[in-house]
Amino acid sequence: MTSITSPTNPHIKSVVRLADRRTRDATRRTVVEGVREVGLALGGGVAPVEAYVCPELIAGPEAEAAARRLVALAGTGLTELFYVTPPVFEKLAYRGHSGGLLLVIAYPNLSLDALTFRAAPFVVVVEEAEKPGNLGAVLRTADAAGVDALIVPTLLETEFLPRNSVSTGNSVSTGTDPHNPNVIRASLGAYFTVPTVAAPADEAIAWLRRQGIAIVATTPAADTLYTAADFTGPVAVVMGSEAWGLSETWLSAADVRLRIPMAGQVDSLNLSAATALLLYEVVRQRGASPRPLGEG
Image 1 (cartoon, one colour):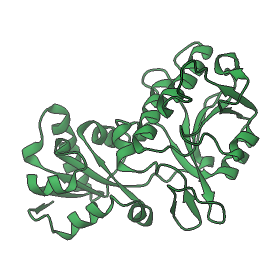
Image 2 (tube, helix red, strand yellow):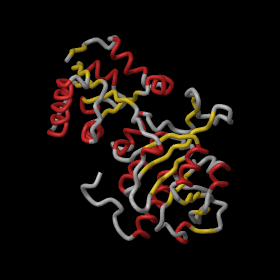
Image 3 (tube, helix red, strand yellow):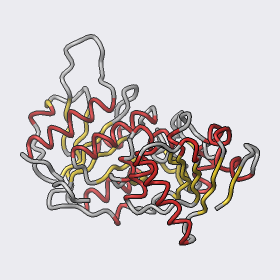
């Protein structure tokens, strides 16, 4: 355990650089801050690469318990623990003091083939979420609705790059980066409870086909209302951005196209609101909470 008192310390600078997506993707690391989020990460078995604790800002039993767990992890050698002063923590934190707890964690090492499901898989696909907060809110709803997995499609580098894409080597991530610290924060920690995989769209579609999971696309041009569809079988609900909707790749791959009725002057709902409607229609049709209490 090391104490850091200077905002110019190299460790502090390395954490600050993780605000940039290119740095996150190059190092495959991201930042988690906040008492609830840190608690869910640790509860999910995440061993942080680094942990930063500001003792002066630790308050309440939940924060104190998380701090003790970090000390225990540091004792095993799995986590490098740093104690920092309030000015240094302010330099680190995305949102003020964040309860005095901040982690640097490795990206989850998860692939499509590593996902596990119940008898009737329940998947959500989000293409081109415009803002991190929207994707984080979708994760919160997905956790509450008992979704098995979230898929964030990517494009091959030879394909057209959307305006909010960043090159990451062999592929580019479209829309919002699922590992953005603001996604983790907006999800209130659901990032650690809903398995999330970024994969090229064609691979994701082929994988869904192999699993026998119906692809349900949402589009204002559809004739069928979302309440008229049968969601009792294996299903992947595919959502696009408010601005651009779904790409032709996903619309062409869809087994069913559905729309949400819009009676006013605006032509779309917020992504998280629209996703909540679809996911809870699945829950309603299946007749019970998809994930019993206590089940991971």
